[in-house]
Structure formats: structure tokens, C-alpha cells
Length: 98
Image (cartoon, rainbow, N blue to C red; front, side, top):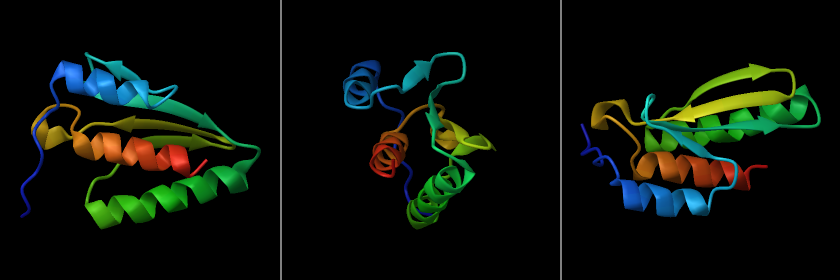
């Protein structure tokens, strides 16, 4: 098993979120989340496909929910107890997939 990153401190997490418009942190869920909206189901599915390929590559998988053109995403690193660099990496990549 590879070493997993530690949970980000609040200042580092907040700094990272400044560069991720629309992403918000939930202290209760210890996660960052965002709702993505696309033109149609095909675009939403394409986005999810690109994210899935990255998730497999970095061994870090999102919690998400899809209905038609909407994809609700929640990112947290469960074994670290909160948001890590993996979540920021995934969120940053997801932004580039839009």
C-alpha cells in the first residue's frame, strides 16, 4: 500500500479552494463539494469518464451522483479523516474537464 497524504491544515485547504471556484468545504462532512451542470447527459457522462480515468490512475475516487446533466461531487480522503492534496488534485482536474 502506498503512503497516503495527511489531512490539509485549514489555511492550506482554504488557499487551495480560492483557486477552485464553486467548490465549498463542509466541516460536518470533512469534504469539499461542487455541483457541475452540463448541456446534456452526454457531456455529463464524458466528464465522469475523464474523472474516472484519473481516479483509477491516482487511486482516489470521488463520491458522486448524476442525474441527466448534473453531477454532484464530494471529495474527501476517508483514511486521512478529511481533505488532502489528493482531493485538491482531483478537484483541479475536474475543473479542467469542463
